[in-house]
Length: 140
Image 1 (cartoon, one colour):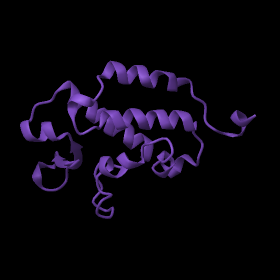
Image 2 (spheres, rainbow, N blue to C red):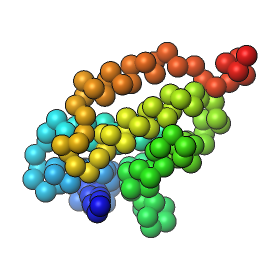
Image 3 (tube, helix red, strand yellow):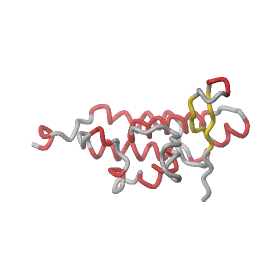
């Protein structure tokens, strides 16, 4: 599968002072926002929260500049620790992080038809509201 990442500059008047964001390919090609492009964008936000990284970071090595491209192969439960924000210092509930990563992976799928709708996304994330960090008190 070929994944195309489209980064656009928003704001800044074209002088380079804007913010570079990653957008869904359909939106980049047509300028049309759909419910599925909103789901994609929400998936990118989940990845930002999970990793602590920007959607597009040109200071990173090639192949790691796009958050979606870099994170997607690391979102399975057995690999998700590779992309969790190190600032969390392992103080998070691992099962909740794995679930969040799985939801993010569904949201940022290349094929829009395979993305869930937001109702499903919200239902999947709601149980995580009660998750406790994996600190010493939760180990007892």
